[in-house]
Amino acid sequence: MVDFYRFSIFENYHKCLHAVSTKSLSEPCLFSLALHTGEDKKSIINNRKKLSLALSSNHLHFVVANQTHSDHIYIVKKVETKGWSDISNAIDNCDALITDEKGVVLTVLTADCVPILLYDIQREVVSVVHAGWRGTKTNIISKTVKKMIDIYDSNPKDIIAGIAPSIGRCCYEVDEDVAKHFFDIPQAFEKKKDKFMLDLPYINKMQLLNVGLLEQHIEMSGICTSCEVGKFFSYRKEQGCSGRFMSMICLN
Image (cartoon, rainbow, N blue to C red; front, top):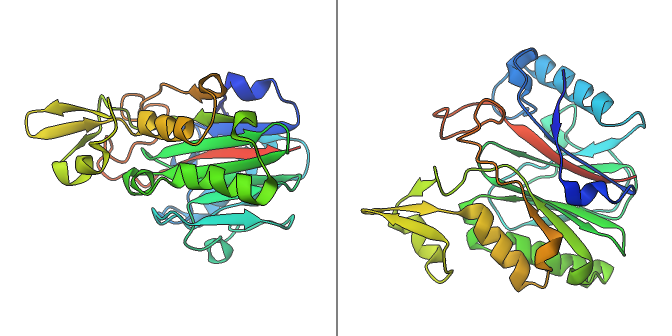
């Protein structure tokens, strides 16, 4: 059975469709949706077909990116499917997608990194962002909002955001060489002897606030993938899992 996590803030807007997939013990590969991690391709494609049917009865065009922990942003200008049945035609070297096209599902695959969904309720523009510590260091979420402003004349006060399940400060232990990039952000981490418990979801929220989003327009899942490994894939907790769950957003 396909089960989704959803944000209450998005549920108020029927022109926008969104969902975050979860693990399923009854499905192949625990319902992983990643074609790039070495799982059986046929099983993953079947999982993706099941997800599509569970998401909507309408025909949708899914766009998948080849995520590289960059700050590269791609504007989807056509109603077309990319990277869904074959990784070879995925959007290359990209960690954020934006579109105003109807029926195009923007996707991000994660297993601890921070997936973020954005929706401009006035201009009818959606975006997905993949923010690991490298993407967070380069402010990929702020750059994505600025791109929405530049291209679609978005007002940050009209953008709602969902910060999806990702590894929390309770479990994300890093060395100083990673933590030092966030020393200027109050409450970004807790010191633990010579280690740092880094809070990537919180840092991305702060970056959204700094670029002009309203706090009441940002919903945090509050779910740590490492703590909730029974429901979400966690690369750290599972010591190198091949599974990935998918966060999605689309304009109806």
